[in-house]
Length: 513
Image 1: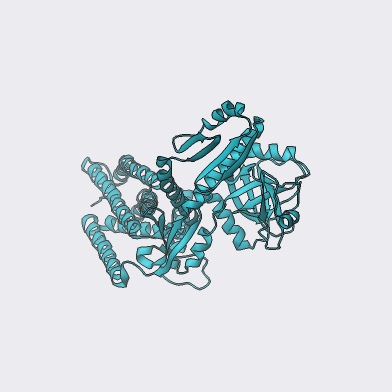
Image 2: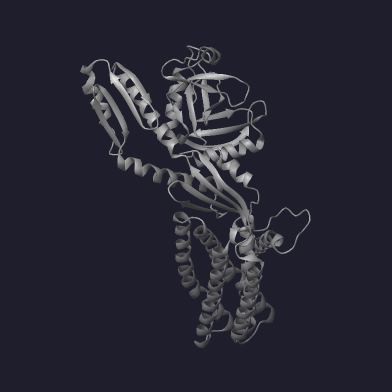
């Protein structure tokens, strides 16, 4: 007897029910229904358009400032006396107080690669970007900025924003389904450069403000809470945001919004060393050159910590997102912003809908004409497959664009192909003289291996497209991968279940396919 175990029937029922409920909002509007419809992409729905410019000069200045601070620390560790250590957006310069330390200086400066020019003239050493380094820096900066922007706007790879480089330092950003560019600007407006630095205890922020003087190796930074408070912190970065493993929104002991974070192994080791050797000293959390908080270290802290401040819930969620995505390599300036309409237009979308409906009807007509009642069962599986794809896209809140529709159409063809393989194998078994039930069993068992091989190779290709692709390519891979999984479910379980129900109910002596 052809039988389906109770658990298989339950799995089929649950999957179809969940798929129906998830796909329902795409067809009808149900009041108070918790589900959401599939997001339409920029070419189908429109969205926000931003043209951004990366501040390359800020990158030059910051990079050379970091080099100057690194030289200062190295010289102090080696007890090398120096003077006039300064940096700007063009170069770093300094002089030695004792030329006998020139060998140590040369050893430290030998670590600079071909991106920099190092020279000494009249006792003054100058470090500047070489011609190749100066030309390469903008390209690297924009590439890094594009990747960080993509992580912030599309952390799961399902929304398919358009992010393209334009010219030397400009980036075009188009986000589907968001009519208000302010939301996008809020996510991209922060550089999100997070650092942890020790507070200089030799002088208070108020004293440094009034005197206009800051101890060497330290800097005056304002508080992020706009309360007029300021802090004098050491320039040396003890732990940086690029050592973050994860960041998530949460609440502190007072039930106020905060950001919980964990560090990678390198960051955890540094954090533990700093906090363990500086108990009782304030440790500042600095975000985009503003002190978010400066709590006093009470005990040694390892991998996990919390950033508290005057956050709202939305701000804590957005801040956790940008910290997870990473810091932008340069500040971004908005040159142009506007809302854009769908690229295809309502007429083209309507024509596409008509074409899809006509295509499905023709496929169903052909397969029913070719395989009779079994073709009708395969057609039912095809409709369930489409429902499950829409349901899955709705559950993960993916964005549907033209490449995504192409992926759905491709999987529809593969789903029909799977049923054709099964029916043809059943035909072969009938020609060999097998009975109805034996032919169905043998047809399915021998066709499944071929179906699995074909679908798994395509699934591997879709996974690789998702890993190495971006934007519309990822959208295509998502719909293709989901469609492969649902087509396997409908071909191997759902359609077979319908055939088994019909065979057990009608008990035919012969089988005509």
